[in-house]
Image (cartoon, rainbow, N blue to C red; front, side, top):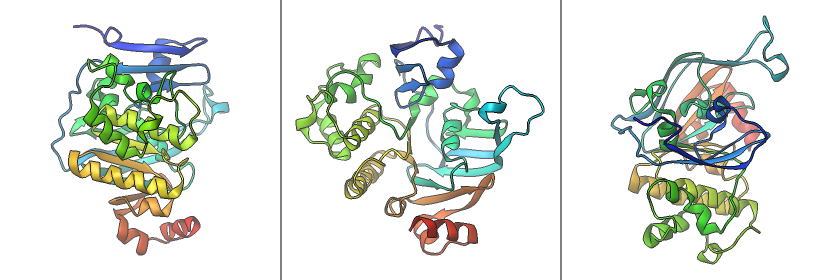
Length: 304
């Protein structure tokens, strides 16, 4: 059986120094990894191994996660900042779940724990009923794609950027699947005139190209970390509405980190994170109109 390294194809765009461990820890599931000095792209040339069968696609059971500050990293006897203290929650399959909460409440950390960009200090996280720690890490990241706020485009045209993964996963390197290609352009709201353009895109257009690239890889879970923040509000709402239609057709599950009320209204469920856990969660419409806790009521008041 070949090793993970033999099954990994990557392009080093900018690198000063990187170890094998740094590659694993800095590789993002949306198709690239980065730290201060590196920028990588990889695509997996074998299919995913997880079959979704449960009502919940992701389950957190008693999850504990804490960090030391950067200046205290490596020091002994320094108290750690607790992000999650025995966190229990579930992400419904085929639905959009919005994560909200104050800065530092663990929204991005939660996404990174799902596809093992971070490891929990305790508890258990499952993806489609399987412990994430038991899954091949690159296969997991191929199925659970994380799309960060800042877009990254590679050299080449918009068309080449969207279909970049095909050249490493056994598909067409030219992206000549016209029907599917047109469907994805419609979802993200990109006109065909942009397809042959190289560079000179707005921030919102770049975010939509990255979203189309993620959807091209057909994930089971799409994690959006403020990934539509550069779009004008009406455009963002249209893109998210199109994504909801795609969900109904394909069963795609979405987790969306956002603090914009109009976007929250498009979600099925909302989870409010603070003080080490999920303080409140439930149907989006109900929680937005009648939050049960004072903390969530006050937080929503700050967003309006």
